[in-house]
Each structure stands twice: as C-alpha cells, then as structure tokens.
Image (cartoon, rainbow, N blue to C red; front, side, top):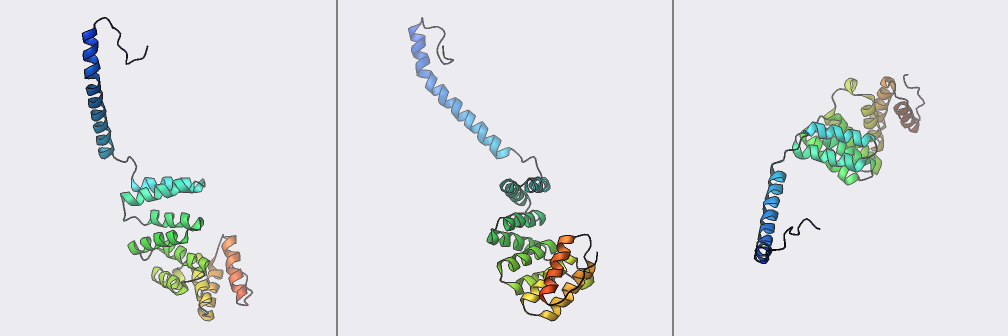
Length: 209
C-alpha cells in the first residue's frame, strides 16, 4: 500500500475527516517547507572567499574547463569587486575563446581599479594587436603601467615594441625590441617571438640565452 493510504478503513467518519483535513495540512506543509527553503537560500553564506573562488577558477582553467573557470572568476568578482586578479583571469579566458569584446571589458575594469597592473595592460594591448586596431590606446595603457625601460619585463618590452612598430615608429620599436632581446631569459617561445619582430625590421640579432 502507498504511504498516503490509511491503515484503518473501518471508521467512515474518521476517514471523511482525514479526507477533508489532509489537503489543508498538505498546503501548510508545502508553505512551511517553502519558507524554510527560502530562508536557507537567503541566509546561506558562500563558504568560499573571493580569493578561493579565483583559485578554483585557475584550477578549472588549467584543466580546460573554461565555462567553470568563468563561473568561479565571476563569483570572486561578485563577492569582492575590488579584486583585480579575477578580472584579469576572466579576461584571459574570454581572450582564449575569441570573445574579444568581453575580454576587453574585463581588462578595462581591472585597469580602472589598478592602472599600474602590468598583466592587465599587457594583455589588453596584446588583444588590440590581435584584432588589428587601437594600437595608440594599447600603448597608452602600457606606458601608464610601466616605469623606466630598465624595470620593464621582456614580455612587456616586446608588446610595447610591437605597438610602436604597428604605429610606424621604428626608432622606438627598435629600442624596446632590442632591450627585450637583451634581457629575455629562459623563455624560448618569447625569445623567438622577439627575434621574429626584429626580423620584420630587418634586424638579425641573437637574443640572450
């Protein structure tokens, strides 16, 4: 027998009373259960911090689970909208997926919080190089995020050099690309990229090992 059936069917008046009361009780139970669920959803606290959501996003991204990574980065931002790192990470995933408008928005939000964030500036500038426009804007972001040429890491020197090259300023392009070539270490991919950019300018130079 089903669990809602009565075990004693000998008393008709009792059965009739149960039939009348049961729907009311049923509705009360639904209402109270619904309220409990609502209270749980309203007052249940996210067990993860913004930083932990970001770190989880990094793990998902490394595993190629970009949709889950995006979810975690967005969760991190929703918990603490002053954090720059999850915005940059979010932009990076969008960039990899070819969602350039969303990537640009994420990088710009990061730079609004910290205009000196070199990763955000470099990746935004790289995005502009990728899509073939807004070189001046990308260069402006890069120059704001960097100080003297001696303190700029090789990857950023390369990006700045390429931006100058795209803007047909070969003197500045050569200066930054030569500096990148002289300071790059332990990154064969970047080394070859810098050499290729110099080659486009007619400069055949062996970058530092």
